[in-house]
Image 1 (tube, rainbow, N blue to C red):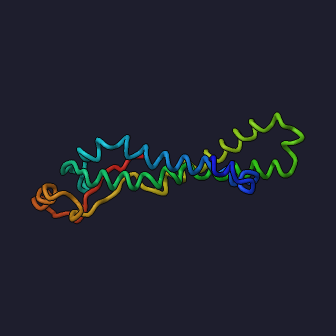
Image 2 (tube, helix red, strand yellow; image 1 turned 180 degrees about the horizontal axis):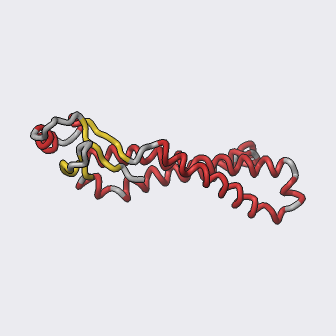
Length: 161
């Protein structure tokens, strides 16, 4: 934010409006692994396709976190990108100059409309249930899976949001 403010060409344009997107993405990149660190050490439940629980896998938890991260950034991107673009467009047309009291309600309205559509779409892009190959699991779980009939090639886990 300070770098953009120090540069006259960046601070006057719409570039300054995208600082929250970068900040939100960086915060998600730090927050999600920190909040789910216990899952990454103890593991998350992995099951067969039929729902039979096989055990807990830290490797599946790491895979889940790595899949949740882009999903969260994708979820935030539409309103952090489109809202500044639309508000900048309204400013350049002089609408907000004539009616400055509409700035906050217009921002809230635009953001709300974008969220109504973008959040479900972003959640749908990445399925809630994910699979992991048996070869990528811990040796103890691989041994458990070898005793199952029929022998599955992959296990499933809930990756979370």
